[in-house]
Length: 183
Image 1 (cartoon, rainbow, N blue to C red):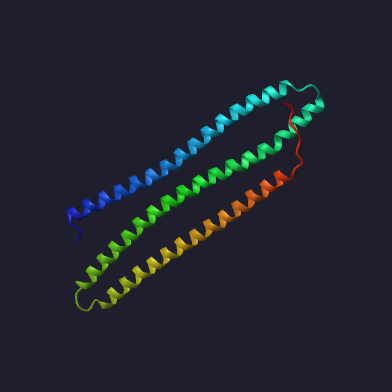
Image 2: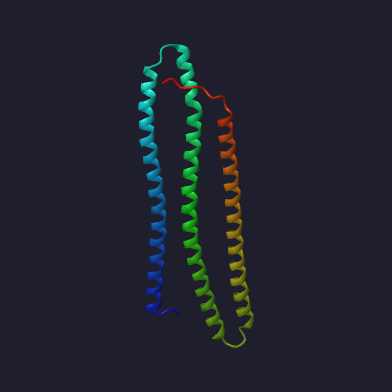
């Protein structure tokens, strides 16, 4: 049985874990807000520059050339923005996962210790039940490890696909014909 002190200590540990995970999530949100503020600031500056450039256009042909010149930088910026968001999400997810894995590992250790303690004090004749409980705990731990490994592999595949897609998009915009912007 768990004593009141042990229960209180477990609650404190759970609260610390919760605050740690919340802190990691907020760090990710802060990085995302900073990125969006930077993008908004840059977009305002570029909008002013574009408005000035549009006002200096003298004919329709020059306007068409100007519009075409905006496409490649816009695609490159969208690609860069997506990469930054992906990096923020990946780092935040890794931080949260690391903290969660550590707390799960600690909980598993404590649970195994409780099971071991309970089995040592089990009455005679309960060997089959003890063996079953130990087998169930081992199976649950193995299943959890398998799920963790599968999730990591899926994340690695998704990351590789994202990088390949970004690289292809960047190559496509770089191979597009360059058009000079009016000054």
